Image (cartoon, rainbow over all chains, first blue to last red; front, top):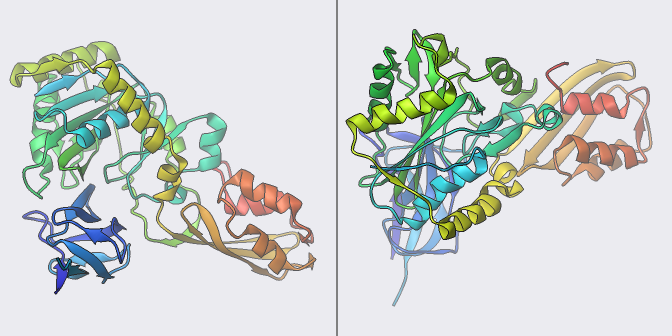
Length: 81
Length: 329
């Protein structure tokens, strides 16, 4: 099963940030709550955790993209048992 | 809260203490550090090194250049300034600066300094910046890092944070150049940096119960490993640099020269020389010889000096000045 990961609300005031680094490449396995990417907002670098376990099958956005609330970020294929 | 005296003025050691505490999660109570550094230029995590600093000048003056883990802009720090760090287990995704700035403001108020906080989370005194702040979420912890200008050499700050005069289209995040001031300009009493630090900690402890913690020898060894493997690793300093494209033009005795280059992870990916100059040999050979060359003054100079291609009445030094303009140019 494929899941889309979207950009979450970071703070009450912050709804956008720059995707500065992918920490998992396409093809990598990721555990739920493991860090998938980093986003920089004004003066803060946030580690963003993945809400699913599985294989990263797609990066929807390259590094350097400004992400807005609910933007598609990555696709995860749930690992089959 | 726990206070750790790091007993070091090495910027990379102190950054490694922050990282060690986040990585190992040995202390579950909030930790506070208050430290100083030797003269250092400190980049934000994802800042563009080529835009923020004049690398040849830093090398010439032997100023340390380090990259921290938190976001925000490039700073200059020396033994006349202080850095403060809060390392706190993260209980939500949200990073609220005000939680960390309130105790600092309260302490500065105890010195009769009417400090305010602006929308960029800088602390101001009479509309001049005396503290910049940045954060990162690391390994389940929130790291808040701030700088405090006590008696920093502001001439050096201006000298070393002067950006090269490139025309750049790039993805890095620029520093906000704002007016700054030292606390000593406003303190009603005269303190040495040592006296100020002692009194600062005294005021902080008066409002927050604080225990002192001494790093164990094995912890220092672990921290030194992080210092060496992460913060003193050129890949960390240069490799985190965002891709950059630069275009620089000039008119020289030998004609107009424009150099366009793409730089990624500190290496020249592509470079092109165009203009109305004459060459001996093929300019493409010179361009190819520079591909994958580190984008540093010395490395480029070495390639230029060994190239079979020469540009009539345009010297190696002309090209280097175009690529690596110094503050004196």
